[in-house]
Length: 256
Image 1 (tube, rainbow, N blue to C red):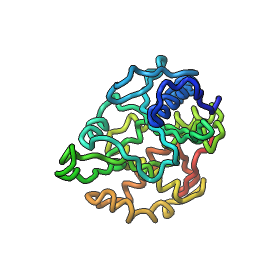
Image 2 (image 1 turned 180 degrees about the vertical axis):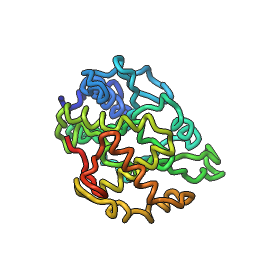
Image 3 (image 1 turned 90 degrees about the vertical axis):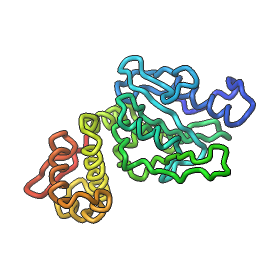
């Protein structure tokens, strides 16, 4: 994988247009489909409302966002109402996120958030624009990257180094089972996955997860049976090969 941009191919003068051209050209020439491994993905025609790329083999779709600095806890996105509609749509694209260095014309980080991780809990509604604004009353949204488990951030390039393709494909496949779950069920599974990650050990017990009961209660205030819900999610994660029961009340993350 070549991490450099081809500067001489950019037909634009403005820095924003140049950056968009370079990043799209790089993805088209260098990025494989993380779902099926096909060695190239296809760029859609310009001005498509949602997706930027698709895989002609498995039909996965991807939206690209790039910026010079590393992505923080949240990403500014478009209209809140549009995003809410996308969450329930079967063709909601996966999100590609790229950090680039324009001085060196190189990709620093590139990762994909699979679409199964897009749930209402990671979308933050912004305040309406002021009445003095050109689009007065318009309501945007933020994508809360901090609410996405690390397993939901599939790196192809990390800190300027390509990640082996077999590792990328394996990580992608491990969470595809979430697509078979309804939005609310996915939300609970993803939150419990985050709790398990926060424990920081491959082996843990039920009390370790119960330590996040208050946090989960704040996210789901209408649920008054959080501990049984936690046990249920751990069962689903076990059934789908994400973790295994080591013994009664003890669990082990499955690391391949």
